[in-house]
Amino acid sequence: MATARTEDLSTATRETGIAPREIPRDLVPAIAVSGLMAVASLILNRTNPLAGLKAARFLNLLLGSLLTGNGVGSERFVHPALRLLQPRSYLEAEQAITRRYPGTMLALMPASVASGLLVLALTPRRWGRSFWLTLAGTLGFAGALATTLFERPPNRQTLQASPDAPGAWLAERPRWDRFNRVRTLLEVGGWSVLCLGTLSDTSGRRK
Image 1 (cartoon, rainbow, N blue to C red):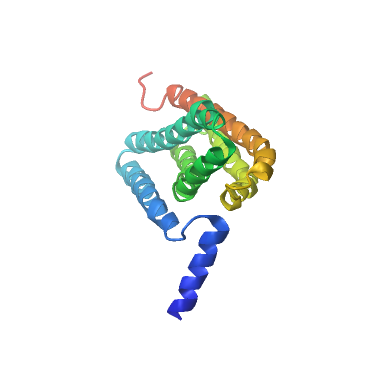
Image 2: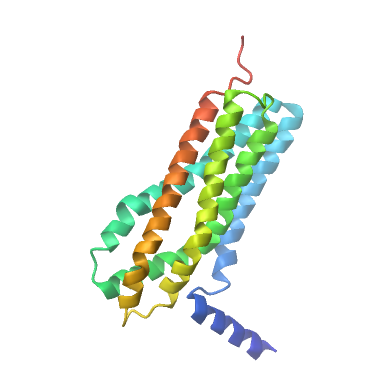
């Protein structure tokens, strides 16, 4: 039984380039922190709705900022620099980066969308400018999450490609670049609109 389980894990690692236990290691902390902050927002909302809304907005902007900063940094600095490497080194570097992403992103991307929905649920004025801006920003991050589904086949190809023969991978790489650019633009747009939604929130202000 133990031998069969070991063989299954080895097969999964060869096929994806990622050891299965590495994903939970990165996934659990991100889910735990996001979940605790969301629960705290709901608890605050029971006694102080304004404080609950502010806590939810903080969580939403924190997650959105992490994702957007990662996307812009990767698009603007990391991947352009890697393209200057020799093909073998370029592939090996992209494989190393791709192995680091799944666990964290499996938590942060859905959590960013969920935190936007939490803000919408706690917003008292659901017909005001802040509500609609927050909705638009949340949809932007939902679009970014959906785009990652199109990136999965190229990511799998990256992990399975042989550094000794990177030609086929190089030929397909521009397709991943296009998806990544679209995802980054959605994140930047979504984050910008979420910030505008926060700035336009008049909850708790004196009239």
